Length: 325
Image (cartoon, rainbow, N blue to C red; front, top):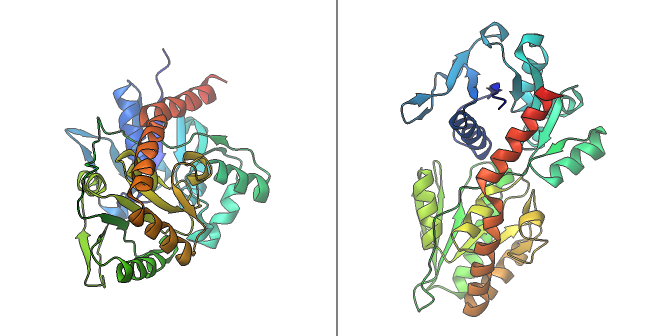
């Protein structure tokens, strides 16, 4: 049995989908007997705990990074740091969860670095292959599946749930525009949003500020329809997580959405920025309960194919292959 010593370099420990994926992989690998550690900049002055185990360490420079079998960059601004590490830090990997030109133009050149690349979706593979002539290894994300979900098919107040994010590219303004139009036609439907530092929400929308992961999953479980208006994603975990909580999902065609919806078979898929499309699909689900329940059921069943444990095993296998080669 090959046990790995791995370093992950995060730019921050602030809560985000990408950071959460790295933390979850670290915990899973350690539970499997590997020795994995997350490094983050000392300036962050933060730590994240898993029960009584602490898998994080602050660093100032490369001198603070231990020897390992594999060291992974997890963002464009950690890629250069990994490039500069000595050989004793092991195989150098760039774990890419987004095409980060969205955040900073300086990210573009990092995809040309001579690092082994792992990406989380075919969209990312195609983007990097087309723009940088690289052929990354694909390890699609997975989700932690609930033990079981049941939704009452009887009459009740329909609930629509949407993530509320401050970043412009998350598409919150487009989602709100769609919700306002649907609300004018269906005033009896409840609309809920969740996120960090939620502000400026229209009065008819119920806001859930700074929820935990458990609370978010509870909101999904209690919702009938999930709207995700984001304009670009590397993968797009929230829509898949909502499918696993038996929501009928209306989502934009970004990231891995074409993969886990099979091109729109298992969710209502519209193009980014298409407010009219979001309105059309929301109204259709609200006005056709049997169609809505059909999407809830098929989305839930399909989501079972996207187990986090399966993704973690593929990730582990990829890292082992680098050390063994």
